[in-house]
Each structure stands twice: as structure tokens, then as C-alpha cells.
Amino acid sequence: MQVNCPTCQKPVEWVATSEFRPFCCERCKLIDLGEWASGERVIPGEDASPQESQPKGYEFD
Image (cartoon, rainbow, N blue to C red):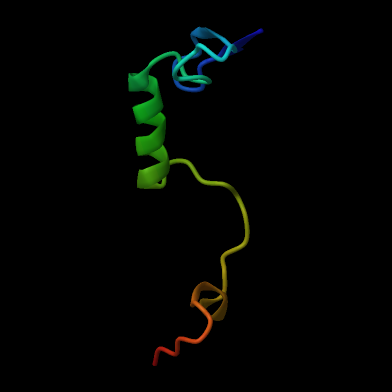
């Protein structure tokens, strides 16, 4: 089966030996990672309330 690289759209064979699948190469994988890290890519959802984002047992004033 073939899929398109999410970064450059180049066809990639979806097999166990494809080292960077679904990406065609390490460069495309790192470009995608950088986009997630910088906030360019996000998964849509509701913002967490401040109480939900704090670990249980910790109080911050």
C-alpha cells in the first residue's frame, strides 16, 4: 500500500521496512515535528480550565 508523505506529498510505501513512515525521509519527519512544537499544527478542542491543567494535590495562588 502507498500513502502520501504528510509533508511533501511524495508517495511512500507503507511497509515495516519504511523507516520514516508515514514520512518519506527524516527531513520531512523533522519538519512536521517542528510544526507541532511551534504550535503551527494543533488538534482542535476546548481550552482546559485552569483547575483541569493543574496536577492534583498542588495548590497555586
